[in-house]
Length: 322
Ligand code: AHR
Image (cartoon, rainbow, N blue to C red):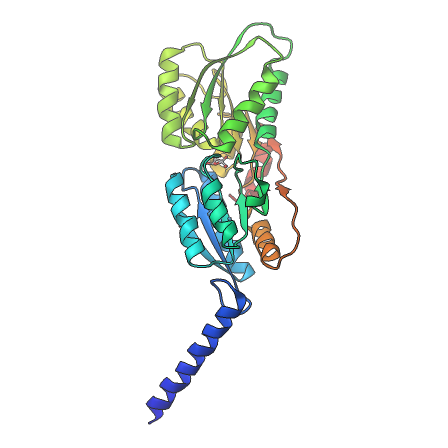
C-alpha cells in the first residue's frame, strides 16, 4: 500500500514538473536556463582553456549546458544547432569553425524563436538579425599588433626581411583577419616580404609539418608569424631539428598567450605574443541570461587583451591561469 502511494505521489510530481517545463518555453524547467553550445573542437591550448571557461562558468551561473564538440567540422556544428532547436533549448551559442555558410541554420533558430550568441568567432553574413550579439576579440587588431611589433623591431634597417606565415584554419575568422591585419601594417614598408604562407590549421602538428617544408624551400627565413601559439610551438620543434635557434636565427611572433606559448616566450624561443583571451565563459553566461530574459544586449562585446614581450612573459607567467 505504502509503495502504491509513493508511486502515485511521484506521478503527481512528474506531472507538475512537466507543466512547469511547458511554462518556460525552453528545454529547462522552471527558472533554469538551458544553453546549447557548439564548440569548434580541441585544436589548441586556447580552445581547451576556452572550453574549460565555458563549462565552469555555466556551472557557477546555474545554467544547464548542453555542450557539443564539432571536431573542426562545420557540418557537425550545423547538426548540433539543429539538435538544440529540436530539444528546444533556451539559448544557442557557438564558435563558428568558418565564417560562411550559416544563414540557413540560423534562420531555422530564428524561426524557432531561439536566440543565438556568436562566441569567439564571427560569421560573414550581412543579416545581423540572425544573432543577438557577438562576444570575442578583434582579430584584425591582433594581426595589426603583430605587424606593428615587427615594424618597430626592424626600424632603421633597409635589408629585406623574409617572413614565413603559418595561417589558421582556412575560412576561419581569426585566420582571415589576423592575416589581413598583419598585411595591412607591413605593406607600408616594401622591405617586408612574405615569402611563404600556408595553413597549419591552428594545431601544433600542422605548424611543425608546414614549417619543415618552409625551411627546406626557404633557407633564408628571418621571421615567422604564426596565427596562434600552438603552430608557433610546432614550428619551434622544426626549427630546432633543422639546427637553427628559434627566437634568434628566426624571430617568432604568435597570437594567444596560452601557458606553453608564454613559457617559450619567457625562454627566448618566441619574441612577441599578441594576447587573445579564451576566458569568455563568465560574460557569455551573463549575455545568455539577458537574451533569455528578453533584455537588450550590445550587438558586439569586445574582449580586452594585451601583448607580451619576453620580459613581460617572465613577470606574468607565475600568475597565468591557462
Ligand atoms: O578563434 C580563436 C582561435 O582559435 C585561437 O587563437 C586559436 O588558438 C584557436 O584555435
